[in-house]
Amino acid sequence: MGSHETAGDRPTRSTRRTFLTASAAATAATVAAPFAATPAVAEEAVAPPGPGHPIVPQPPGRELSALLREVDRDRIEATVRRLAAFGTRHTLSSQDDPVRGIGAARDWIHQQLSGYAAASGGRMTVELQSYVQQPASRIPTATRITNVVATLRGDASPDRVYVITGHYDSRATDVMDAVSDAPGADDDASGVAVVMELARVMATRPTEATIVFAAVAGEEQNLYGSTYLAGQLKAAGVDVQGMFSNDIVGSSTADDGTRDPRVVRLFAEGVPTAETPAEANTRQSVGGENDSPSRQLARFVSDVAENGATGMRVRVVYRRDRYLRGSDHISFLRQGWPAGRFTEPNEDFAHQHQDVRTVDGVQYGDLPEFCDFDYITRVARVNGATLWSLAQAPGTPKRVTIVTTNLTNDTTLRWQRGTEPDLAGYEVVWRETTAAEWQKVLPVGDVTEVTIDLSKDNVFFGVRAVDRDGHRSPVAFPRPGS
Image (cartoon, rainbow, N blue to C red; front, side, top):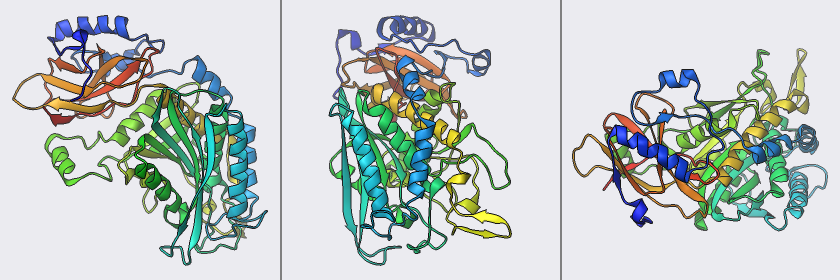
C-alpha cells in the first residue's frame, strides 16, 4: 500500500473496552485539539452505542475568526454594482468595448485581482486563461472564452488544490441575446463578488495548500469556461481535492416575499457523475450512495462553517443541482473531483434570466436593488471558513480500504500516510447506515492500519487526518480491498 510505518505504527487490534483506552491516549499524545468542545446533551443522546465519542463541530480558531471579520460588506456591494454597470456581460457581447460588455468586465476583474496579488508577497498570481470555442451549443460563431484565475500557492502542500468559482457572464430572457441589458447582479455578480473578496482577504495570508479563485465565463451558454478550467487542471495532473461554485448567492427573498437570510443551500451529488462501471458494481454491493467524495465535502462544510463567526446554516441538498439547471461545479464532477454548488435558499425567478422591464407594476430583471448584500457577505464567510479550513488541514486520506478478504465480525481499515509536515495522526469515524451524518469518532494516532471490534456489515466507516493544531481533513470513505 506504500504506507509509512514505524514501530509505533504497526497494525493494532483491540476490543471495544481497550480500544477506548487507547483512543484516549492517542488523543493526548498526538493531537493537540484547541477546537475541542463539550458535546451537547442532545448529541450524546442520539449517538449510537459503541466505541468512540460523539462527533462535534470544528469551531473557528483565532486566525480564521480574524479572517472572517475582514470580509467587507461594502466591498462586496461595490463589486456587484460595478459588474452590473457593464450593461451586459453576455458571452457573445463585445470583447473590446472599454465600458460595455464581457470584455470590459473581464479586464476590470483582472485588474482588481492583480491588485490583490500585489499584496501577497509573490504567493498569488493572476492570469487570463483563454481559448477559442468553436461553434457549438449556444455559440454560433468561433468565440474567445476567458477565465480570470488567481492562484494562491500553498507553502507546505502546494500540489493539493481547492477551487472556488463564480461566473461573470450574464444573460437576458433570450439566451442568445448579446445586445440587451443583462445586469446579472444575482446571477452571478454575487458569486464573483464572493470569489473576489475572499481572494483579497486571503492574499496576505500564507496557506498550507493551494487555492484557486476563478471568475469563469460561458456558464450561461453551456459551462464552457469552467469546462476548460477543469480540463486544464486535469491535463496538468493537479490534485483537486475540493471545488465550490457560487452561483446565485445574492438574495434570501423568495418570489412570495418570504425571507430566509441565515441559510445557504449546498447541492452535493450522491452517485458520482464520473463513476465507472466497476465502481458502480462495488457501490451496489456494499453501499455508499450517500458517501461520495462530494457528500463528504458537504459534511465538512457543515462541520466548519455553521457557527457564530459565519452566522449561517448550511442546508445540504442531496442532488447534483436544481431541476432544469446546472452550474460550474458539474465541470469538476465530470473530471472525478468532489464539488458542490452554493446557492441562495429561495429564488425569485422574476430576477433571473429576465429582460429588464416593468409589467403591470412588477419590475423584472436581475438588478442590484434586489440583492441583499449582508446576505452575500455571510455566504462569503461560509466559503471563507470552508476554504481556509481545507487549506490549513491535512489532505483527505488516500487509498483508504476496508479489508474484506475473509468473514469477520470486526473491521480492519488501512490507508496511505499523508506527507504533510505537521500531520499528527488519524481518526476513524462511523455511523449507522441510516444516519445522514457521522456520529462517532475514534482517534487512532499516527498509524496506517487499525482493527475495530465493530462489524463492517452493520455501520459505515470513514477515515480523516488531523494535524498538530487540531485541523481535520474531510472524511475518506473506504473501498473494499485487502
